[in-house]
Image (cartoon, rainbow, N blue to C red; front, side, top):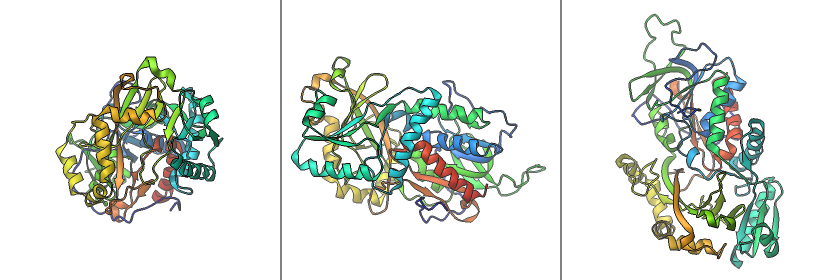
Length: 459
């Protein structure tokens, strides 16, 4: 077992339950099955990866590059790849300053940022290393800023320095602040483009991608198919909502917003459970984009996993402002009134969520208020750039964060990987929690996952 992996003590038995699982393509056109050069059966694989987001695709790519003789398939429930968390994030290449020293987040982010830059250079994928300022605008924020700077140094983040007001103005002429951390290694990229490039690498190496394949059941085969040459070589059966089946030897799940349901579906523990939080962004009008050059972030509240409302330049030249963090009433609910009864019932039945509400009631109410009244968000933005007015902004896109929550109401902050026991449990590995900076860390995460897959499944 890889020592760095955090494991939950789940017990996997026989598969049970049912759920909309995961599936999508590296080109703009949909497919049902795209294969590389190998002659693998269209219905059986050595390893199946459930989930076509950036973590699943990075893992698929790394796995097939290391083990080119294996037949490997990726299942994605949508007709396109990387359309949910990967396709709705801010696009920031994080430097690794925020995370607890020695945590997986810290290690994988620092490694992952270097690997993402290297990969983009190799593939000709456009990015901008525009840097970031984390700005203290109030005197009481300065000790927290200094502590964050020390944390960044412990994590080995490149090029950090503390700067004063005059240097803040040199970096961001319209930004006010008392002190800031200059993070020159922070950048921006289109992560969906990166994910689709991973998918292309995977397919060119012989991997198969099946889209519009929504997983409904994962179970051990009850008996060998009649006259099958493979016999019980592929003992795991994965069924979709249309009644199709895929057989395999081993399963890796990278199901994001549905990681808890996919785990429970395979007979493993549903904990930690996923609570969806929507983050709404505002857009700075094009004629006002000159106000922001790079990323501008507030000093974060260490009690919460959200980094606060910030200014984020995009590869297309837009400037995103936000996000907030409000409860989503649908796991893929990108609009305020999106609603799914099952998703809401799961939230209400979650004892950890009830505890979370009581512990953070005022914060939650404030976030809901900001979501409804733009003027409140603008007042916060004006602390950093006073020239911004409510007439300078528009409502923009939104993303939904898969926030893992334990039974005590604690937000699970680090990456969590979960194996099981029993016949199916010994053949499955779940990526249970891959929060931000998972996109930045995706290549580093994939290398760690593949190390574990090799050891766990004795490849």
